[in-house]
Image (cartoon, rainbow, N blue to C red; front, top):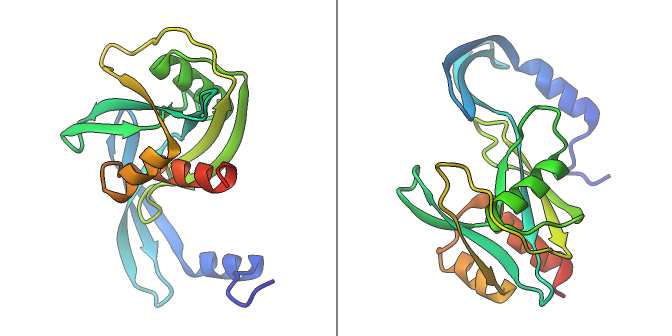
Amino acid sequence: MGKDRETEADSRQTKEQFKRLERRLVAKGAIIDYYHDIVQVPNGNIVTWDYIHHKGAAAVVPVTEDGRILMVRQFRNALDRETWEIPAGGLESPDEPTINAAARELAEETGYRSEDLELLITIRTTVAFCNEKIDIYVARDLKAGSQHLDEDEFIGVKAMTVEELTDMIYSGRIEDSKTVAAIMSYKNKYCR
């Protein structure tokens, strides 16, 4: 085990030095719940930290037969603009298998289906204040169908090469963290 690696005992000791005294619900939303956590830190001080609870999500890198990746373009209110992303969405329940959610989002957002999904990576999007966890899958052997968008979804789909997507990441045209992590991980694992 490397010198910089934290041992399980060290992790437990660190956790014991930080003691959550209370978690106060500030606001309940459709996607997230916002809390104030009252925490005693190692020097004994009491602090208030923001905490966002997210129900979890899944995403998918849909790979066409010719090796291109299906991307979705949609308006994102938080950024007040459209973005290019991989298909993704929240879990319908806390115990929904993420592979099922990934398959559902693939079909809904792109119109394609796949029974060949493989876990690529798991990411935590903003660990400083949110517990959001996204399992990202690779989907192959895509079967064409039709989109099944929600009433408030307006999504375009385009197949792009890994090189195009990498250029879009480095030029700042793709900034979405799950998409950046997914494309770069896919490129590293499968495009050598």
